[in-house]
Amino acid sequence: MHGPIRVPVCGDADTAVSVCSKACRDEYLGGFVETRGGKAIRLLHLPRGPGDVPAAAWLFYAAVRLVGPLLDRVVDLPLLPDRRGLVFPTAGLAALVVAWALLRRMRPARWISAVLAGAGLIYAVLAWTRSGDTGWALEAVTFHPAVIALSLGDPRPRRVVPALAVLALYPAALAITALGAAVQS
Image (cartoon, rainbow, N blue to C red; front, side):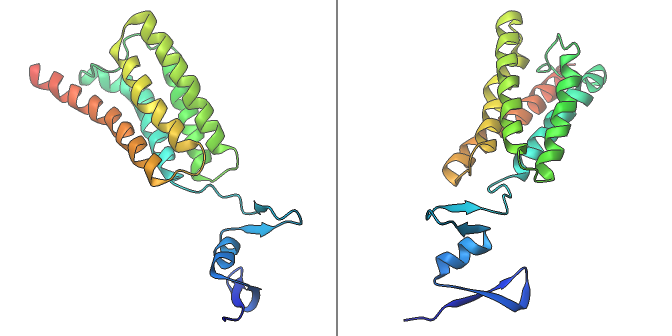
């Protein structure tokens, strides 16, 4: 039988806490403590899983929304929606704010990311049904569902890999159609 495992507190080698097993050590290092009711609660409350991946997705989305219309004047981007209005730059600014919050590991950032992606999904579906523009349909079936899946919960590889595959379709489709339009010109 093994004795208790000593875990340094806050990286200080002189101060340590004794735990009963490797699982308890991992929970302690992960920011868990056990309450009186026997439930484990998370103290550090840092987002787990690919927190930087949704932030990178939102940064790309912000670039498409803020720089895309300017780039569309130089290079033809067929999958950028035709009727953009004020929603386009406003969504780009909101995406920048959410990406910043995700990178700063703010507590509600993942929920805000999911809510913004849900609102974007609803808007993209409505705009697509109203205008028939394939740019809105592309957003509705690739970007928004993938970001929702990455933002909610503690993603496991079974959930992350398909979400990343769907998410990769968005920039790939934009790039391929832009190259196709450039070749045809």
